[in-house]
Image (cartoon, rainbow, N blue to C red; front, side, top):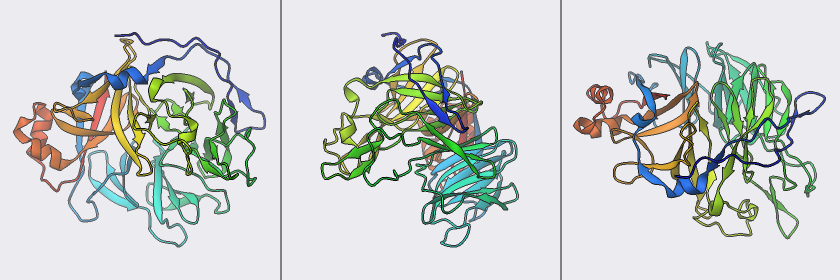
Length: 402
């Protein structure tokens, strides 16, 4: 298998605008290349035990109607809590899985949201940050007792969060795409990729990692424009990974708010052109095109869900790519025993949500575990199956990576 290559090229200049003077990041060595094209073509059966040194399960309490979870839209953790976003509410469970309370009020009144789009938590204080939509996207912060501590100014321009938020070192960071002030933007404009707020939700500044003269806007022949989807924000507990759609470089946002190149992505023939994006794309979308939804980074393994648009019908998961940085191979597309796309443990589907401190955290549906029953070979998961019912809450799965 071809070894993981190191890119020899001039690294990109990046500006972080959170103080009066921009910070320019100098080259600190060539980032490793993730060969996306080769990994997509390298499909193989994969079990989570291959990359795990330990797997733990947390059963979320199903003792009341209020504690019941349907579809999980998001999940984060703090020192004392699990926070599970179920549609337009967030349910709190302690570290042992006991139900605590719910955050988020649906409505049009003060401190109410029509929908919740993203969540983040302060590890030390258990404060929770909810990003939601009213007339535009706003942020509320709650303390551990459920009291609203702060809110963003409703007059602040809208944030396009896409469910991507993180809290670290007293700062809340969210994916952002503000509409340009001019009706027809200048092609040299630099729209911010991230917005940075203090813990009391005062805006501190923004981050722009654009290295090209192509802004995240698709221009139409009639003079209008449509938004180009921004990339991901992934938090591994030590640093953030940020990415702009159609760029080939993933950047690391360090704890001191400095930026440096982390990975180069080689999509090969799967790379979509800029004109395939936007509300009025001029290039038809091909199922051959791929883009990354996020990139979960452990100390050895990098895992990414690969996405593909299907015309105007929406976005669909096509692959889970796994890269082993230690062995230096080009990665592979993980499939189950029957060839189904996804990550599995003893044949039971595992849905990853994030990596923190080299722990891949996600969940399994109780119904899937119960249905697998005696076919489960993992002893801990097999014992858990005997304690669950088909309508039990999902089970949090914590995979400590090798």
